[in-house]
Length: 106
Image (cartoon, rainbow, N blue to C red):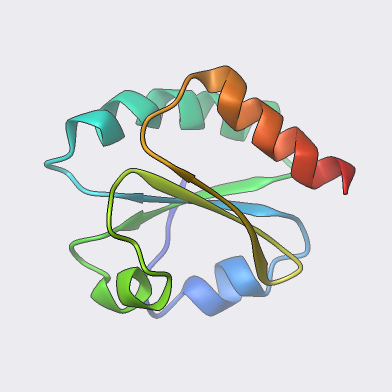
């Protein structure tokens, strides 16, 4: 999974031709560490159809402010450069799969 920063966000996420799941996380966040292997697995499952990237919330305060991130992990799903879904907190893999499938179907 690609690490995205304040500087690379526009090109990697907003300019993407495919939907992008953005994982807002931090190294000290236990639930974030629980979600990471699930997202890694999903990135392989959806390779070529959905891009899954990570944003270190501590290192990228501009993005955290821009998207009103107040709790992590938060997954924002973008399609066509627009925020279309947000999932806050650690959730089971099935929840993430359903959200991604919903975006792909629309």
